Length: 176
Image 1 (cartoon, helix red, strand yellow):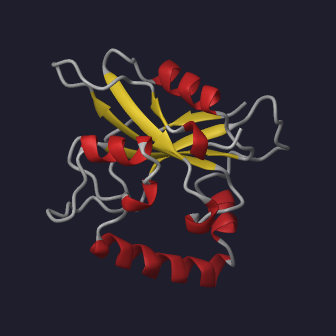
Image 2 (cartoon, helix red, strand yellow; image 1 turned 45 degrees about the vertical axis):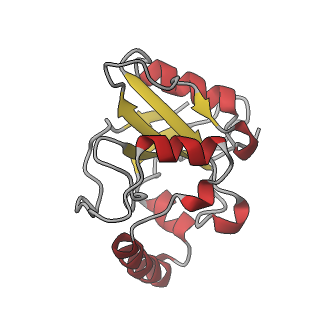
């Protein structure tokens, strides 16, 4: 099993912050829990940069999957095993528009990940007394990378006051 993690707060390709259309932790949590994940999106400026990158990358690599497997996910070099998925956690290079202090990460795999695997992975890599998270898988109609299973994970340090539980997940959107 390959387990690669990049620490939260690692700058992505887009480190510029946009003051408009920024989603709070409470909004992200609410949208995931109420199955409104399509409401969480990139800032229009980030989306424009992403679209330009997408066009250039498709022209060079043919597919986003080819790009990812030859660059960021090159560690996926063997056959996938359904019982023991290899995963790589990376910052989203084109993150959704969330407030400062929330990290948008992507957990990549060659096989679909169960909610229990994702939860176990997060608990083993991020101390639940320090971190809280929420995660989901985009529905097929809005997935830009359909052939490589990945989970969108939003992480933040827990506030000192009691807060939402760390086990925020929307299992209806995770392929088992």
